[in-house]
Image (cartoon, rainbow, N blue to C red):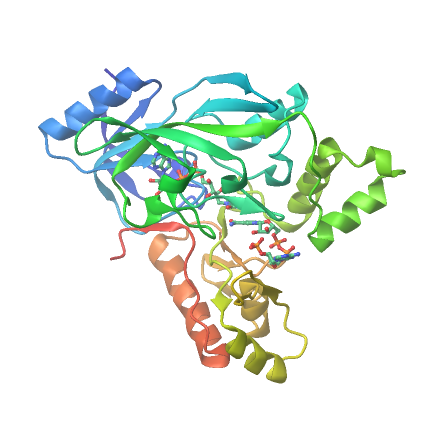
Length: 343
Ligand code: FAD
Ligand code: NAP
């Protein structure tokens, strides 16, 4: 049975360092502890909220019910033809596993280096960076249904992955506790350096084409991210606060007539993705400070807690940015992290 505590501060369990308490809290390290935690919650009719690294949540109020810190550990693998299928328990750290797989010569995760958080949370928003998404590597996951307590396996189709989206943000929201995920990696590197900043960094560092491999890609991704993004340990943040909006071709054309320099990326379905950071920057918010919260001065998509800020203040600033972008561009920004307590 895991130790279950009452009225526990979650400030050190969320990367925005927002003040909030869990009514009940426990850390589970294996499936047996998870089942015991679920039984405890069931017997008291408590809502169960899983958290991993807390790097994609906004706590705007105390959480009632039982918060379960998903810290299950373990990694195993098997060869399936040319693919190495690696199964990671939910509590393993994403970036550590990217590095560990690289060291083994198992490739595919390198563009996703330095993303904070746990393996178990990665499918929730189909994490992605520099042209690669979790869904590109995904094989399956095992979860426990919070309602029935039954084990359920999801393959890629069942996860309904989309752009920073999955079934776990929609029809299956709040229903499952992910206990492990399996990714298909390869011993044959496939280099993807289509993102301009990554391509430039790789080309600058490689003395010859032979040096351009997954290790260099991972190192360059880490270098760029460290230059651009605030370290949550030093300046609390949750990464991108908004998704990059997808707009129709007609709306893109209309915007380009007014803003010919607007960056935009055509999608397969004809829509365009517009960087939300650019929209916010155009509205003059880069580096804005509102009391104890603000917009990061190197990346306008990142909202930061400058010390002592709370969820309400952060959401007020987010609403101000959304209003400004909507007024100027007629585009609705959507918050990316999961917001708790501001219904
Ligand atoms: P948490 O914040 O703990 O949880 C997020 C959500 O998932 C919550 O709703 C929680 O209930 C749920 N959840 C967590 N674990 C489980 C589980 N085992 N079972 C069921 N539900 C669960 N994201 C990107 O996509 N790309 C990036 O490049 C990126 N860069 C970032 C950079 C910084 C500096 C920061 C702070 C964040 C960044 N993020 C990025 C966001 C974040 O790292 C990812 O969303 C990550 O997957 C969150 O993992 P976590 O363990 O911290 O999840
Ligand atoms: P960037 O390189 O400055 O580019 C700005 C945006 O334009 C990106 O968000 C990206 O969308 C899009 N983009 C750039 N080049 C593209 C291309 N060739 N094709 C399609 N889209 C392109 O971005 P950044 O802010 O420094 O972030 C770099 C990468 O890390 C991005 O992939 C970003 O998503 C990821 N990241 C995510 C978070 C998070 O919390 N979610 C935080 C930090 C970084 P996409 O976002 O769709 O890739």
